[in-house]
Image (cartoon, rainbow, N blue to C red; front, top):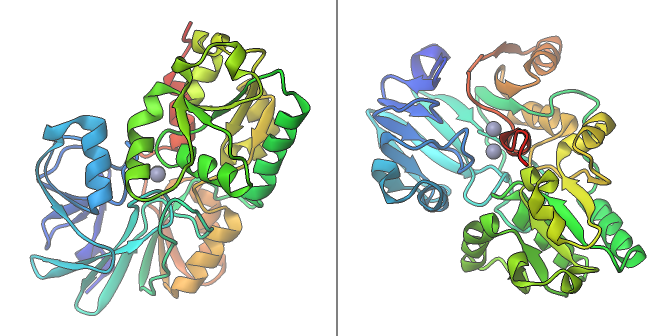
Length: 344
Ligand SMILES: [Zn+2]
Ligand SMILES: [Zn+2]
C-alpha cells in the first residue's frame, strides 16, 4: 500500500478515501478530523467533526452551537476506527486541545501533526513523538534563521520594561487562542502577581482555559479600568488592536508583540512594535528538523509556511519529501495582524 492510498493530498486538505474523512479541510466536507482550534485548520460547516473535546469546545465558542452537523470527541491516546482505518490522537503541544492525528492502515502509519512545538508550555499537554513512516509537518518557521530562543528571557524583557516605565501601560499583542494564555502563564511563572488586563475579544477563550484548571491569576477586563489605573500595567490584546483607536485609552502605551516573527526586525518595525517578544507556538528550524529526524519517517510531506527549505533539507538528509500546496492554511499571528487592515 502506498501512502497516497491512505491519505491523498488535495488542494482542500489531505483526504482519507477509505476512511471517508479529511484532515483540517479548508472547505466544507462530510467528515472532518481536526487537529486544533485555530481558524485556518478548524472551519465551520462540516457534516461531522472528530476532534478533542477542547478543540470542539473552542470551535463552539468561536462559531456558535451549529458549527457542525455532528461532533465526536476523542481523548489523547484514543483510537477511533473509520472504514477500517484507525485514527489516534496524540498531543501536539501547540495550543490547548491540539492533536497530531496518526492514521494507520495495513501497518503503514502516517502522522498529520497539524501545527506543533516541541517546547514546554504551561497551558497545554506536551508534544508527544509518534514514530511513523510518513510525517506531515508544517513549516511556518521552516528557515534556519528562525531560532526562537527561551520564552522566559522574553518575559524578563517585558517585566524589566515595566519596572523602567511605571507611568506607561504595556500593551502585548498576542493571538487570542493559545498565545495570549501562554504569555499570561509565563508572566505568572516569572513571579508577577498584579492583575493582568485583557481586551474583551479574548475573554471567552481565556475563561475557557481557566475552566480547564490553568491558573492565570487575577484577570480583569481593560475596559473596566480608567486611564490612570492602567499606568504600569500589562494588557493582552489581539495584534490588530495595537494600531487602533482602542489603544488610545492607555497612558503612553509601550507596544509589544509576542510572535515568532519578532525575530525579524523589519516585521517588528512594520507593525510599529516597540518591544518585540520572540515567543512562538510553532517549532523553530531546530524543532522542525529534530522532530522530523526523531519520527524515523522516510517520507516527509510539508503543508504550509516555508516549504522549500524544509523539503530541501529533508531530501538532502536522505528522505523523500514533497510540498502539499494546500491553499488556505496560514499563520495565526499574521492573520490577526492583517485582518485589521487599515482600521481607524
Ligand atoms: Zn495553529
Ligand atoms: Zn497552521
